[in-house]
Length: 305
Length: 300
Image 1: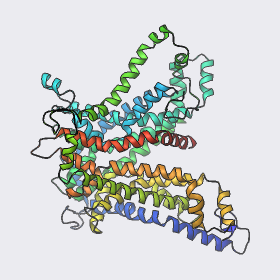
Image 2: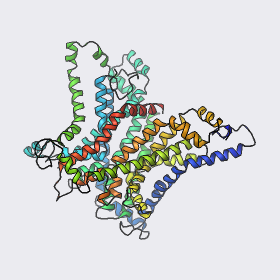
Image 3: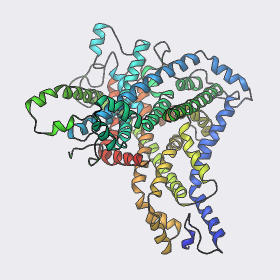
Image 4: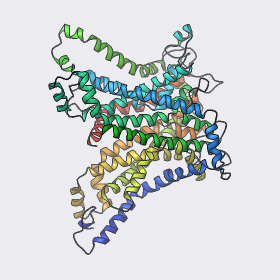
C-alpha cells in the first residue's frame, strides 16, 4: 500500500495511476456493497414490485393472478372512502402544518435565549418528541376516554366527549399531534433563528424598527430556508398520517377520520384483502407526494428570488 | 446561565424577545409584578406539555375502579400487564430483539457505506448515494405493501427479522448521510499518516477512523433504536402471530380484548413502559444529542 492509493489524489507515479484508480474503485465498491444490497433488495425491488402489483390482480391470500391493468386503479378511485379520505387528509394536513409551524416558531421565539427557566421550558416542550407516535396516541386514547380520562366525570355530567363528533375527533387528534411534534419544530426553528447573523438585528434596531417590523421584515425573510424545510417535512408527515387515526379515532366517528394511508391498510388487510388495489392507492399517494413536494420547493424558490 | 439548557449556552442570542435582559438584573418587586403575565403564560404552557405524561404515570399506579388497581396505590396494573396474553416480558424481548438487530444493521451498513462515500471514488458513487437518500421520498405504506409480499417470498413472513430489515431500510438515508459527513469531517492527514505507516484501508478504518467517527455512530445508533422501539406500522402489517408482537403493537391490541372492554389501567402501564426508555435516553443525552444536531444543521 502506498500513498498513491489515497483517494482523490493524483498519483505520484505515472506508471501505477490507472491501476491504483482501479484498486481504489474496487475497494470503494467493497465498502459500499452492504448499502447497495440493502437498497436494491429492500427499496428498489419493492418499489418496482408495487408498480407491478398495482397493475395485477393480487389478492392477499393467493398472490399474483395475472395482469389487469386499469382495473386496480379504477377500483381504487371508486372505493367508497377514496374521495373522502383524500379530502380529509388534505384538510388535516393544512391544519396540522399551519398549527405546527406557527406554534413551533412561537415557542422558538419564546425560548431562544439562554436562562434556567427557558432551558426548563425547552426541555418540557421537547420531552413528548422523544415518545413514539403510537405510544403518544395510546396515551391520548386513555386521556380522552369518557370512562378513565381526567375529564371523565365532567364528560358524564355534561354529556360530551372528545372523539364523539367528526370535528371533535379531528381537533383532538390535532392537539395530540401538536403536543407530540411542537417541540421538534421548535428545535428546527431555533436552528434557523440562530443562523441569522446578529448584526442584522442590530442594524434594524439602530434604524428604529419596532419589534413587529423586525420580525416581519427581517426575521421571516431570513428564515425562509428553515420555513421551506419545515413545511416540506410537516406536509409530507401529515399526508402520510396513520398511527394517530388507527389508534386514537379508529377512523371514526362514522368513518369521518380515515386518512389515505389508513385506507391503504384497510383495503389491504381489513376485509377487502386486495393488495392490487392497495398498491394502486400507494402508487397514487407516491406520485401525489412527489408532485406536491416539487411544487412546494418551486414555490419557496420563486418567492425568494 | 449554567442551566441544563438544550442549546449550547455559549451561543449568542438574538435580541428579538428582548425583555429577558431586564429579568436578570436584581429583581425589584415592581419588575416581578409586571412580568406576572409572562410567568403565568409560560408556566401554563409547560404545564400543558407535561400534564399528559405526569397524569398517565400517576394514574397507572393510583386506585381506580375497573382496573387491576382498585384499592390503594400500587403496581396492580403493571402486574396485570405481565399476565396479558404472552406476557409483557415476551413483548419486551421481541421489541428489544428488533431494536438491537436494527441498530446493528443500521450502524454496520452506514459505517462501511459512509466510509466508501467519503473516501473512495468509484463509478456509480453518486447514483448509489442519491438512491439511498431517495428512500426518504417514498411513503412508508407504499413500500410496506410490496415488502410484505417480498418477505413472504423469502420465508421471512411473520418474523421479527423481517421487521428489523424494514425499519433498517428507512433508517438508512439519515444514517448514511450522517456517517458520510462524519467521515468527511476527519482530516485526511490522519489517513495519509496511517497509510504511510503501512496500514491497509481495513485496519485504517477500524483502528484510526472508528474512534474519530464514534459520535456520529452513537447518534445513528440512537435514532435507529428509537425508530425500532417505537415503530408500529411495520409490526402491525408484518406480524400476525400475537406471540411475536412488539410492545407498541401488544399494548395497542390490549384495548380490544374481552368483548370490547378496555383495560385502561393496563394501557396506562403499557404506555409508561413504552415511554420510559425513550424519555430516559432523551434526558441523559439531550445536551449531546441536541447540540450535535444543531451544529450539524448550522454547517449546512
